[in-house]
Image (cartoon, rainbow, N blue to C red; front, side, top):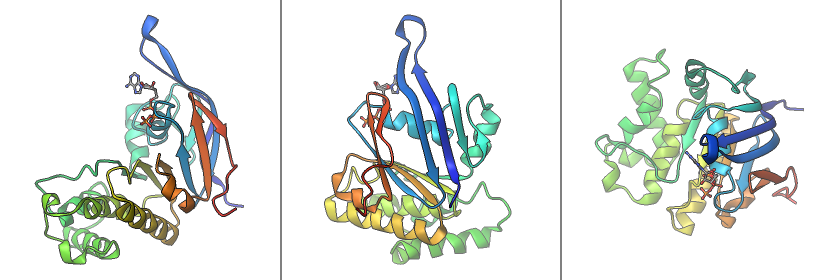
Length: 233
Ligand SMILES: Nc1ncnc2c1ncn2[C@@H]1O[C@H](COP(=O)(O)OP(=O)(O)OP(=O)(O)O)[C@@H](O)[C@H]1O
């Protein structure tokens, strides 16, 4: 049995203060095992991104338990959250590439927090990673000269180049046509399985649900069903 890398118990989250205080996550319980690909779906505004950002240490968890790689993030300090973020790769809807950097330089940024590598090693690993995503011939292109699908592949290369234990993806296919979207998730799946990393992916895109080992559904801030809908069933 693989052990959970993400373990969430009775997690509640609120935005705002006093009269404007609003609960957006209600008593969330979820365990995700090492190497699992979990897709989270659900209507707009149901709390998916909020949960993803809490797991990713991008905002502070308030009430309950949220353990990521054995580290409790509920009540964690900013410094602890910064350390926790280093174990994760992030992929967002808008690829968030730096327009003034080439594909290679963008991917290299994914290694810059891992300071045991020399500049030369960072460049080699980044180039290798871009080859793996099929962009070996585009190393020195700027984002503006790449298609949407290619940009998202650069973002995947940047997220995975440091071999993170966890990849968090928020609507990674939303800006892509169906063929590019498919290619991008297939690529994420292949690379994640190769590296043994765990993926939590938020999407509205029904066409990609089959890459999941498990699908969870968020509704009105609650996880509606957990561990149902095995994609292989
Ligand atoms: N920074 C914030 N301050 C106040 N309220 C927020 C904030 N971020 C999100 N919310 C509210 O929290 C609720 C959940 O939002 P969230 O973005 O997590 O939903 P979602 O399921 O990811 O939606 P979508 O699919 O549209 O991205 C919504 O009602 C939203 O308006």
